[in-house]
Length: 236
Image 1 (cartoon, rainbow, N blue to C red):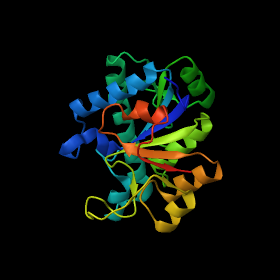
Image 2: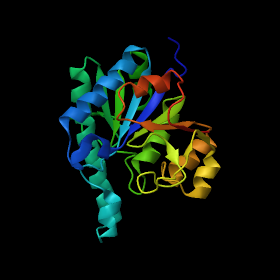
Image 3: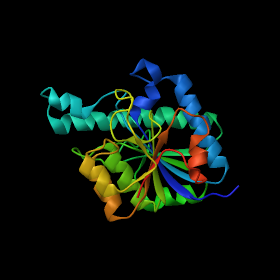
């Protein structure tokens, strides 16, 4: 078994944790995600994790309804910390040592984000979950994922979603949607494809960090992706 990627940054959407119920945290779904991540971890892959907060609170949606954008973004960051703790619990039950590092200081529940410490945890075989986004409003958790991936020298960002890759239009609404196997950063930006937001894509483009998007709900996909199997869509 040959690993193509030794160190990855896995980006999960908050909605993924909600399962079919749409909001909150679905314990069956989080167990399945933890089992998948644990399988990849046991194969020797170093894993950093960034998780969204959309299942609990969406800052952008709240600001569209008149709430102050900075305040609503901070609330969104706190939602990601709740998800991080839930995922930490599920991973440790699956036998994987895990640390949560928060970009907003919360000494009682998470370590502060310290880059060198995060890398040390990864080298010692611990999974590191980066909570609270970048710690700044106006940046999404996608941008946080890109930033943390660069900082920990990850070889790829793996964005696990509900869809099995990138399509030219919404495959749920359009039966004739075409899936890409590979696509360039610039094409993603020009076509306005909803892979990650433009700040995150630009950051990856500037630093030549590939992005792989794939279906999270298929068990075993995280390990397959790390072994270089052709699943999902690769942005490079």
